[in-house]
Amino acid sequence: MAGCGCLDCTDITVPTGATGATGPAGPAGANGSNGTNGVAVLHNDITDSSTIGILSEILKTYTLPLATLDSDGSFIKINARFRTNTANNPMTSTKEANIYFNGSLLTTYEFLFSNITVVEFEVIIDRFSNTVGKSKVSWNDYSTVGFLNNSTTSGFGSIGGLNFTTTAYDVTARANSDDIGDITCEFLTVTKYKK
Image 1 (cartoon, rainbow, N blue to C red):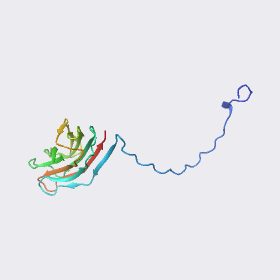
Image 2 (image 1 turned 45 degrees about the vertical axis):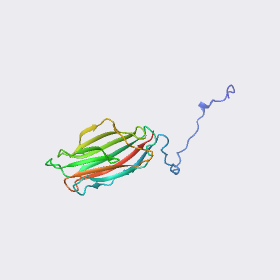
Image 3 (image 1 turned 90 degrees about the vertical axis):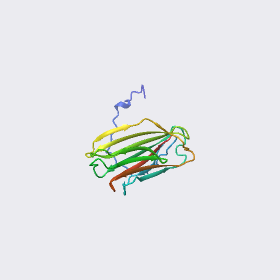
Image 4 (image 1 turned 30 degrees about the vertical axis):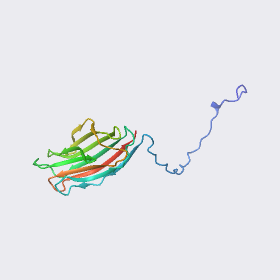
Protein backbone atom coordinates (compact mmCIF):
# COMPACT_ATOMS: atom_id res chain seq x y z
CA MET A 1 0.00 0.00 0.00
CA ALA A 2 1.28 3.41 -0.82
CA GLY A 3 2.54 5.54 2.02
CA CYS A 4 2.64 2.76 4.59
CA GLY A 5 6.38 2.22 4.40
CA CYS A 6 5.99 -1.37 3.20
CA LEU A 7 8.04 -2.85 0.43
CA ASP A 8 6.39 -2.60 -2.93
CA CYS A 9 5.76 -5.75 -4.97
CA THR A 10 8.95 -5.37 -7.02
CA ASP A 11 10.98 -6.08 -3.92
CA ILE A 12 9.32 -9.42 -3.20
CA THR A 13 10.95 -12.61 -4.42
CA VAL A 14 8.58 -15.52 -4.96
CA PRO A 15 10.31 -18.90 -4.87
CA THR A 16 9.57 -21.22 -7.80
CA GLY A 17 9.77 -24.98 -7.81
CA ALA A 18 10.44 -27.46 -10.60
CA THR A 19 7.96 -27.68 -13.48
CA GLY A 20 5.38 -30.40 -12.97
CA ALA A 21 4.64 -33.26 -15.34
CA THR A 22 2.59 -32.55 -18.45
CA GLY A 23 -1.03 -33.62 -18.11
CA PRO A 24 -2.83 -35.93 -20.55
CA ALA A 25 -3.93 -34.56 -23.93
CA GLY A 26 -7.50 -33.39 -24.20
CA PRO A 27 -10.03 -34.96 -26.60
CA ALA A 28 -9.71 -34.18 -30.32
CA GLY A 29 -11.81 -31.30 -31.57
CA ALA A 30 -14.58 -31.74 -34.11
CA ASN A 31 -13.79 -31.37 -37.80
CA GLY A 32 -14.69 -27.99 -39.23
CA SER A 33 -17.66 -27.56 -41.54
CA ASN A 34 -17.57 -26.11 -45.04
CA GLY A 35 -19.27 -22.92 -43.98
CA THR A 36 -20.66 -20.29 -46.31
CA ASN A 37 -17.51 -19.87 -48.37
CA GLY A 38 -16.19 -23.36 -47.81
CA VAL A 39 -13.92 -25.72 -49.68
CA ALA A 40 -14.73 -29.41 -49.91
CA VAL A 41 -12.92 -32.32 -51.55
CA LEU A 42 -15.73 -34.08 -53.41
CA HIS A 43 -13.69 -36.91 -54.94
CA ASN A 44 -10.14 -38.17 -54.50
CA ASP A 45 -9.30 -41.38 -56.41
CA ILE A 46 -5.58 -42.08 -56.04
CA THR A 47 -5.50 -45.67 -57.33
CA ASP A 48 -3.69 -46.34 -60.60
CA SER A 49 -5.99 -47.05 -63.57
CA SER A 50 -4.34 -48.10 -66.84
CA THR A 51 -5.50 -48.53 -70.41
CA ILE A 52 -6.24 -52.13 -71.37
CA GLY A 53 -6.77 -51.71 -75.11
CA ILE A 54 -5.89 -49.37 -77.94
CA LEU A 55 -9.12 -47.32 -78.05
CA SER A 56 -10.06 -44.29 -75.98
CA GLU A 57 -10.93 -45.53 -72.49
CA ILE A 58 -12.41 -43.99 -69.35
CA LEU A 59 -9.83 -44.55 -66.62
CA LYS A 60 -11.53 -42.59 -63.83
CA THR A 61 -14.91 -40.96 -63.45
CA TYR A 62 -16.84 -38.88 -60.92
CA THR A 63 -20.44 -37.71 -61.06
CA LEU A 64 -20.88 -34.15 -59.83
CA PRO A 65 -24.21 -34.20 -57.95
CA LEU A 66 -26.93 -31.81 -59.04
CA ALA A 67 -26.97 -28.45 -57.24
CA THR A 68 -23.32 -28.83 -56.17
CA LEU A 69 -22.56 -25.50 -57.84
CA ASP A 70 -25.59 -23.70 -56.44
CA SER A 71 -24.41 -20.10 -56.64
CA ASP A 72 -22.81 -18.03 -59.40
CA GLY A 73 -19.07 -17.78 -58.83
CA SER A 74 -18.82 -21.18 -57.14
CA PHE A 75 -16.49 -23.53 -58.97
CA ILE A 76 -14.89 -26.94 -59.04
CA LYS A 77 -11.23 -27.71 -59.60
CA ILE A 78 -10.37 -30.98 -61.35
CA ASN A 79 -6.83 -32.32 -60.95
CA ALA A 80 -5.55 -35.39 -62.76
CA ARG A 81 -2.16 -36.94 -63.46
CA PHE A 82 -1.33 -39.34 -66.31
CA ARG A 83 1.90 -41.18 -67.05
CA THR A 84 3.00 -43.20 -70.02
CA ASN A 85 4.87 -46.37 -69.26
CA THR A 86 6.83 -46.59 -72.51
CA ALA A 87 8.70 -43.92 -74.40
CA ASN A 88 6.95 -42.72 -77.55
CA ASN A 89 9.75 -43.78 -79.81
CA PRO A 90 9.29 -43.70 -82.70
CA MET A 91 6.91 -40.80 -82.22
CA THR A 92 4.35 -42.26 -84.60
CA SER A 93 2.13 -44.00 -82.06
CA THR A 94 -0.95 -42.35 -80.55
CA LYS A 95 -0.69 -41.48 -76.86
CA GLU A 96 -3.31 -39.10 -75.48
CA ALA A 97 -4.72 -38.10 -72.12
CA ASN A 98 -8.06 -36.26 -71.89
CA ILE A 99 -10.43 -34.62 -69.41
CA TYR A 100 -14.14 -34.56 -70.24
CA PHE A 101 -17.06 -32.74 -68.58
CA ASN A 102 -20.64 -33.68 -69.42
CA GLY A 103 -19.34 -35.79 -72.31
CA SER A 104 -17.53 -32.84 -73.89
CA LEU A 105 -13.77 -32.73 -74.29
CA LEU A 106 -12.24 -29.97 -72.15
CA THR A 107 -8.58 -30.70 -72.83
CA THR A 108 -6.32 -33.21 -74.50
CA TYR A 109 -2.60 -33.82 -74.26
CA GLU A 110 -0.58 -35.79 -76.79
CA PHE A 111 2.64 -37.41 -75.66
CA LEU A 112 4.58 -36.34 -78.77
CA PHE A 113 8.13 -36.45 -77.49
CA SER A 114 9.91 -39.56 -76.29
CA ASN A 115 11.29 -37.91 -73.16
CA ILE A 116 7.89 -36.73 -71.83
CA THR A 117 6.36 -39.31 -69.51
CA VAL A 118 3.94 -37.43 -67.22
CA VAL A 119 1.26 -34.76 -67.65
CA GLU A 120 -0.74 -33.10 -64.87
CA PHE A 121 -4.01 -31.28 -65.59
CA GLU A 122 -5.80 -28.64 -63.57
CA VAL A 123 -9.23 -27.71 -64.90
CA ILE A 124 -11.48 -25.09 -63.32
CA ILE A 125 -15.20 -25.06 -64.08
CA ASP A 126 -16.82 -21.89 -62.77
CA ARG A 127 -20.59 -21.44 -62.52
CA PHE A 128 -21.15 -18.24 -64.49
CA SER A 129 -24.91 -18.74 -64.34
CA ASN A 130 -27.18 -21.73 -63.79
CA THR A 131 -26.95 -22.61 -67.51
CA VAL A 132 -23.41 -21.45 -68.39
CA GLY A 133 -20.07 -22.59 -67.03
CA LYS A 134 -16.63 -21.19 -67.74
CA SER A 135 -13.64 -23.50 -67.99
CA LYS A 136 -9.93 -22.82 -67.65
CA VAL A 137 -7.28 -25.48 -68.31
CA SER A 138 -3.67 -25.68 -67.17
CA TRP A 139 -1.23 -28.52 -67.70
CA ASN A 140 2.37 -29.32 -66.92
CA ASP A 141 4.39 -32.07 -68.53
CA TYR A 142 7.49 -33.71 -67.12
CA SER A 143 10.45 -35.47 -68.68
CA THR A 144 11.76 -38.95 -67.91
CA VAL A 145 14.05 -37.53 -65.24
CA GLY A 146 11.23 -35.65 -63.52
CA PHE A 147 11.95 -32.10 -64.68
CA LEU A 148 9.18 -29.73 -65.70
CA ASN A 149 9.31 -29.43 -69.46
CA ASN A 150 6.31 -27.29 -70.47
CA SER A 151 3.49 -25.47 -68.75
CA THR A 152 0.40 -24.08 -70.47
CA THR A 153 -2.72 -22.24 -69.28
CA SER A 154 -5.72 -21.39 -71.43
CA GLY A 155 -8.11 -18.50 -71.00
CA PHE A 156 -11.66 -19.12 -69.82
CA GLY A 157 -13.89 -20.82 -72.38
CA SER A 158 -17.66 -21.05 -72.20
CA ILE A 159 -19.68 -24.25 -71.63
CA GLY A 160 -23.34 -23.71 -72.49
CA GLY A 161 -26.48 -25.82 -72.28
CA LEU A 162 -26.04 -26.70 -68.61
CA ASN A 163 -28.42 -26.70 -65.68
CA PHE A 164 -26.37 -26.88 -62.49
CA THR A 165 -29.50 -26.91 -60.32
CA THR A 166 -31.26 -29.95 -61.75
CA THR A 167 -28.58 -32.00 -63.54
CA ALA A 168 -25.66 -34.14 -62.39
CA TYR A 169 -22.57 -34.07 -64.62
CA ASP A 170 -19.82 -36.61 -65.20
CA VAL A 171 -16.15 -35.70 -64.96
CA THR A 172 -14.02 -38.30 -66.75
CA ALA A 173 -10.32 -38.91 -67.19
CA ARG A 174 -9.73 -40.76 -70.45
CA ALA A 175 -6.68 -42.05 -72.31
CA ASN A 176 -5.83 -43.59 -75.64
CA SER A 177 -2.61 -45.38 -76.62
CA ASP A 178 -1.53 -47.61 -79.47
CA ASP A 179 0.39 -49.58 -76.85
CA ILE A 180 -1.85 -51.73 -74.66
CA GLY A 181 -1.61 -50.86 -70.96
CA ASP A 182 0.66 -47.92 -71.66
CA ILE A 183 -1.12 -44.94 -70.06
CA THR A 184 -1.98 -44.82 -66.37
CA CYS A 185 -4.14 -42.23 -64.62
CA GLU A 186 -2.58 -41.89 -61.18
CA PHE A 187 -5.26 -39.71 -59.61
CA LEU A 188 -8.45 -37.76 -60.21
CA THR A 189 -9.45 -35.19 -57.60
CA VAL A 190 -12.48 -32.89 -57.69
CA THR A 191 -12.64 -30.02 -55.19
CA LYS A 192 -15.54 -27.59 -54.72
CA TYR A 193 -15.08 -23.93 -53.86
CA LYS A 194 -18.35 -22.36 -52.72
CA LYS A 195 -18.91 -18.65 -53.14
